[in-house]
Image (cartoon, rainbow, N blue to C red; front, side, top):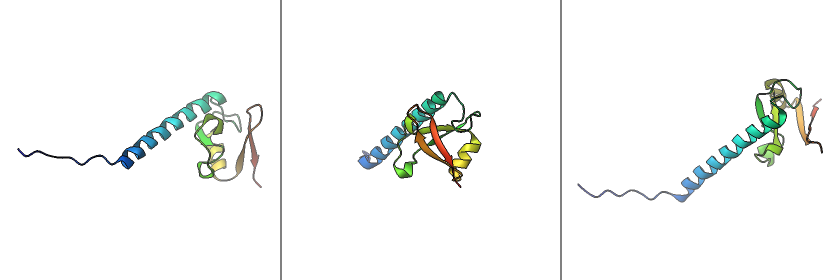
Length: 102
């Protein structure tokens, strides 16, 4: 039986996997913390929530943090995604600020 050699793992592949795992962990913490802060209720309309979204989008550099998270119902999440409402951030008391786009 011949001795078999295996290629060394490429560092960039391991780095990508580690980064993906870190992002998934951060998202899980964000979802859990955002839901707990909102008490399971939509932070826009007050109905039962089901979705976590970024106040400042990832494309605009928004982090995966509870402070940047908003807990929304399916309807309000659709409004935000469809650009019907815009999440502006949080007040000094932590209340979610939003506005309806015209």
